Length: 525
Ligand SMILES: Cc1cc2nc3c(=O)[nH]c(=O)nc-3n(C[C@H](O)[C@H](O)[C@H](O)COP(=O)(O)OP(=O)(O)OC[C@H]3O[C@@H](n4cnc5c(N)ncnc54)[C@H](O)[C@@H]3O)c2cc1C
Ligand SMILES: *[C@@H]1O[C@H](CO)[C@@H](O)[C@H](O)[C@H]1NC(C)=O
Ligand SMILES: *[C@@H]1O[C@H](CO)[C@@H](O)[C@H](O)[C@H]1NC(C)=O
Ligand SMILES: *[C@@H]1O[C@H](CO)[C@@H](O)[C@H](O)[C@H]1NC(C)=O
Ligand SMILES: *[C@@H]1O[C@H](CO)[C@@H](O)[C@H](O)[C@H]1NC(C)=O
Image (tube, rainbow, N blue to C red):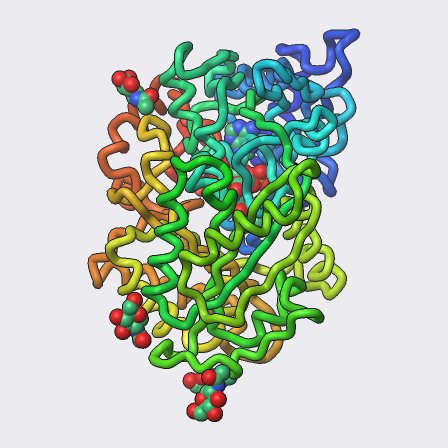
């Protein structure tokens, strides 16, 4: 009842005082309380948190975002505002109960928003903050250009990944996506729009990058481009010895300063503790041409666990294929994988970048996509990755994983320390991503409860073993925990919050700060 009243208030306020629907000939944004819109905004990829907002805004421009945040900031009662990219968070980070969700990527008003603008000479593209990376790619390819740094999956929004980091196998070389941005337009928690960069309003710029949506809503991003390669030589090799595997990965990322011909363009890897995985998502690589039986490799002392190194070499149509062969062979010669486990494929660049979408379609066809995803993403310092292997891959996980486990190292010097993103205090750290799906198969090890408990066990293990991991896409419930997460960046984070979102109304789904709302009957967290 009380929330209905507040909703009425919100909508009335917006329409009467800030002219959200008035200013023609601007296309009309839509403030909605349709059941379907509310339902969509209450869900995310994690399928573990469900929180309905009071209303949903489908913006057509940055002005709409400004109007809404101004109304939220200026109204006596106050309400929260959460930008929602593609809703691919795990723990309700884009949800809010006490206010309005802005559907930044919704298709509703897509045709009327900022169109991507490519500057070939200066090597960048300007895009709407809610643009999906797949659409950024499609646009830039028309100019034979491409962003440099990626995520594995492209149906994520620019604003969403820039609020976290944006990492994939290119990060060792180019840094995360937040290091490949020249400029942003940001609407702060006071409803003011600033253009910011390293040179201009740099505090806001650095705060927003990796800032978990706490300082403003990204409405435009200027993203660094390079000439787009045409094809990709995509290679997977196997290891049974973890230390050999990590040494090779670390060697490959140490080549970041070399000429393009003398390094790979992408370095990732994954852990295979479970034969089922090979027949699960992302497995198309191995079959049917390259069938794999785990038992056909004797992992002496490997504890039955195998490690797959995944690397690519980009090239142009003008490059002779024997030149590519030579470059790849020269690099492979330096590695120490199990002989006879080289699996190679060669595909167009876009197919490589969009590879996970294929897996998505397969899982969707089997009704295995819209299930709970108790994911755990950790940055593990290099000095302790072997202990992590023993304790987690060969220990806690048993031989069931319920999804792929990615593992690859990154160079810390490719991360700008001034950005808000948090990484371990070592020159090299690994991403370990446990990308599991909970299923109702009757098998205990597949259940949401079992997997969530296992995540807690892994975090406790790291804590007790003194492995100083940092969560990527972090989830915490108390400010004490957040302080621990940010460490020596906390003071600055707090200072920026007070400056840019003093009423703490933005992205409350992260549960870092409580909003200051007058007599709210519901709580955001
Ligand atoms: C299948 C899958 C694969 C993935 N692969 C990778 C990967 O390879 N690498 C990687 O780094 N990540 C990966 N992710 C994680 C992804 O980066 C995060 O989910 C991220 O939040 C982007 O998702 P989104 O755009 O849907 O954002 P949402 O989940 O909608 O939002 C995330 C947070 O950002 C805030 N936010 C959203 N838009 C804006 C904006 N315009 N301005 C300010 N704040 C905003 C929201 O309020 C929320 O707090 C993957 C996720 C999935 C589901
Ligand atoms: C694995 O070990 C078994 C016996 O322990 C042996 O017969 C087999 O040849 C080995 N396989 C490989 C691929 O080394
Ligand atoms: C793995 O390889 C290292 C050398 O890189 C060696 O010292 C170690 O004994 C091997 N481990 C196992 C379990 O075989
Ligand atoms: C997995 O582990 C269980 C118990 O730890 C064991 O019974 C089972 O045989 C193992 N399965 C495989 C495929 O190794
Ligand atoms: C980080 O910020 C400090 C102080 O504002 C500045 O001196 C330094 O150059 C910045 N570092 C980078 C890498 O931009």
